Structure formats: C-alpha cells, structure tokens
Image (cartoon, rainbow, N blue to C red; front, side, top):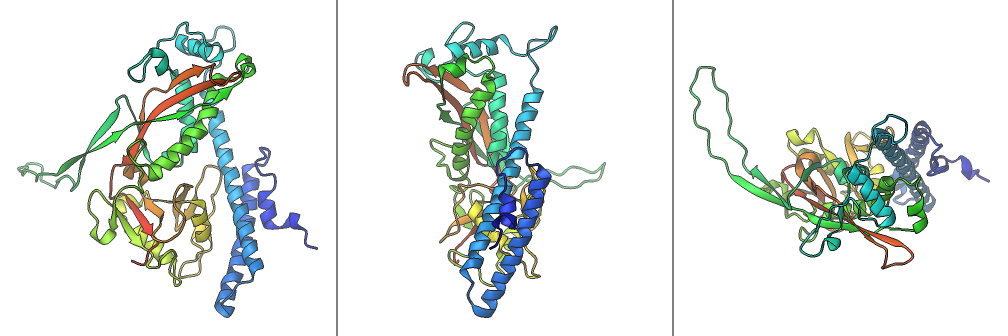
Length: 424
C-alpha cells in the first residue's frame, strides 16, 4: 500500500497553519510538490496527445497537488502577515519602565476607557452627519487607526498594488490629461516655442461608508492585558478587507468604490480614454487549444512599455490553477511559485496577485487583468475612523459600530488591460 504521508502533495500540506514550520521548510515542500505537479501534468499532456484522453486518477492527483500548492502559498502569506503584525507592534512605544514617556495620548487613554467601560470623560464627540453626537460616535485615536490601516495594507490585495491617498474631504478630485502634455528639446539660448494645448479632464473619487460591528464580552473588556488597539484592528480588518476587495474589483461606484471591472471596456485596437482595453482569447470560455500562452503574451504587450515594467497579473485562485498547467512554445512552464514569505507567484516573469472576487474563466468573462495598478487604480482613504459603543442591543455583549470612509476607481485608463474569454 502506498504511504500517503510521504507524497509530495501531502508534505506540502503538513502542519498547515502551524507557526513552527519555517519559511524554508514551506518553500522546500512547495518546490517538491511543484516538481511532482509538472511531472504529472507532462504525463497528462502526453496522454492527451497520444490517446486523446486522460486517466481520471491523473486529474485527481493534479487536483490534490493544486490544493497543496495553494495551501503552501497560504502559509507563506500567513508568515508574511505575522511578520507585519510583529513589526507594527515593535514600532509602538512601550508603556512600561520608569522614566519612559507615556506612549498613549490623553485622548487615546480616554478612548480606551470608553471602549472598556463606556466612560465619556476626556472624549470629544464628532457627528458623522446631522443628528445627535451620540449617533456619530467617537473618533478612533491615531494609534488605533494606524493599526487598522497597517492590517488592511497586508490583507487587501488591491492595496498592495494600487496607489493609496489619504484625504480630509468627502470627494477627492484629480485633474488628468487625456492626450499627454506637450514637451520638446531646445538649445540653451534658443527661443522656447509655445507648447500645444492639452485636453484636461477631472476624475472624482467620492468616499463611501464602510462599517463593521464586532462584539465583545464584559470579561474581555475588563482584562487589562488585552491590547484594545490590536483587538479592535483584529476584529474589523478582515471584514473591511473582504468588503474592500469586492468593491475594488466590481463595486458599483454609487454606494461603494468603483471597481475596475465596472469601467466600460473596448477592444484594444479601438481603445479610447474612459475605457479599459481588452484582448480576446479567440475561444468562448477557454484558451485556444494551440499555444494558449500566446494570448497572455498578447495581453502583456497590449500594455505600453512605460506601464509594462511595473506590470502585475490579477486573477482568482481557480484561474491561477489553470495557468499552472500551461507551457510556452518551447515547453517551459509559464507559472513560477513564490520564492518566499511575502513574495508573489510569477507568470511569464511578472508577479501574480490573487483577488478571489475576480470572475472565473467562463463565457465572455474578464478573468485576467494585467497592468501597472500603481498608476492605474487609486484608493482614497478619508482620515478618521469612528466608533460607537452599544451595550444595549445584544446584552450581555457589547457591540462596537466602527465606520470608515473609502473610495476608489481607475485613474489611468491606459494602465490596465483585460483578457476576455470570448470568440471575438
């Protein structure tokens, strides 16, 4: 009987989530699983070529190793998030020790008393809209807001590749030129001819309200050893990141940020400002059967060189699993695994960022994006996170209504291209 505990895919999944498994061990197990994956896929492709069919057991093995590679990648991501959390905590001044400065401001201390016991002493009320101050809640101190922001930067895929700007207004307006600024070379003492006129436009990025409502027990709030900043960030960051990730991909732009897949699209050959250019696979709901990787190359080179050097592929996990099986015209696999914690997988030499809210491969689906998202997409954070304590609604639990305002949208329509799984 085969010892399943010694298979590469099982090794890659061993001790999933265990903190004691080091980065080197995870990378080594991933590389072993990847080698087995490619050997199995080679056998699958040979069977297709020779017999036109594949043994279901081979497909099942590929699926198992696929899952193992995803699990190993998740553990690397978790190591990176853990390291980021430790770095954030290490940067915060200690509150202990004689002669040390008190790290927390008077407002932060008052805010902690409000969270723990509902005391209003030392707090200034800030209404979010017309109504009573109590309806508006209280501004989260900068220390707590910074911790939430650090966590979001790690958890939100779009934040890791987009431009992020903090604003104090409800709407951020950015002027853009749709045809480029006129410029030229002149000699040192030569006359400077008048430059041509440019076409200026304005893009508005309104901020929308995002909320979460974590709950706590009286016992937790009474425990002085609990770091309130870290607890609050830990409770709201996952909820905020999930909602943000969905909105940045497919948000409607009305009650949430405008997702880049919601922007109008046009075939790259007839691209114009205000649209995202698309490249078609030429086959409905699939890649072409011959040299499928060439459509990805077409997508890469649809992007201008000034954007391409910072290009990133964006797709969901199932699409990435499909691309793991793909080889180029020379027989080389086009997907490479992460080199370590915090490092992305690579496709054709460009980094891959997983966004689970990207559509799966299907009829007319825009399942793969490629672009310089730093120049292409803007995330706008309005300064000021608010919290309202509610000890009445869900007794004996205390609810915390936390809100922040976030906006987003495409800021350069030439910086992102989409691959459409369509016949034309």
